[in-house]
Length: 371
Image (cartoon, rainbow, N blue to C red; front, side, top):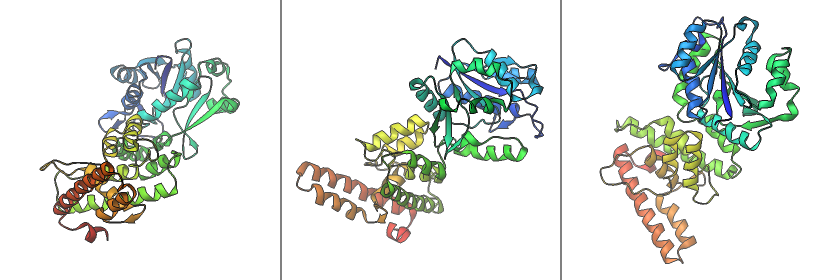
């Protein structure tokens, strides 16, 4: 977004770590490069890195990743001095996102949501929150720059923002990474382990997202949990049977929990896919948008998509039912309409074929596995 700049604070000493935070390797990319990457992926083209300690190395890494550099010669005075240096280096009239380099796993979808809210609320101070707790990066309006430069530093930026609380707007997100920083080597190890959850949310994040959706009630949540139980059991059975391609159990869990994230909306499966695409979860989106009906060609492999689809056909509410029972209930509702009844029977036939394929691949019946 042209009128929003990202400021990455990378001037500190990293005194509580054996490594240097900006250059710390996280899955083949430095923490600094990952932070710059996430803003670029979110559509923020102008990313500026505030350097201080080991400035030359940090500058080289920032430039290589496509960012500009602002030097803070007063970095030993603390983080607020870097915030002030960064603000001085902003273009006129720009709002800005503020992210320390030790919080590198924020998802691009979270930043995109902040940008969308900023477009509607340009005068507000936006705070992303996870389960009610504020995290990073805040998005600060352009007119706050003068206050930051004039602030004496008492309590740092938090001290200043506490005086501006009437302008604050919390933006709930299902991204736990807004709270995850790394001050110690143990923190860095924990962040490295979280890399596996960048492409799709973990169970807690899925439940958080469902809680944020006004269309998902307790009944819908119970159904999603049942679909996840059935889907996870099938994925585990395929793994035990040595089926290839082996399913990604974490992806199955996330997609099953969120398959009805748009329930109640028109074409809810397609709308669910759109929501997940917007959040930055394209693999999940392809699964969710297909969960109503799949006609799998002969010889095509079973994937996470087919697992979630079939699990949904086995859950009536939170109760395990047969495919026939699930579709017969629909026929009782719509059987008076010949066209609708024919479509329902077609979907039932496809679901039964899928069940046969799944049972052959697992080496056991669904009733035996789930009953």
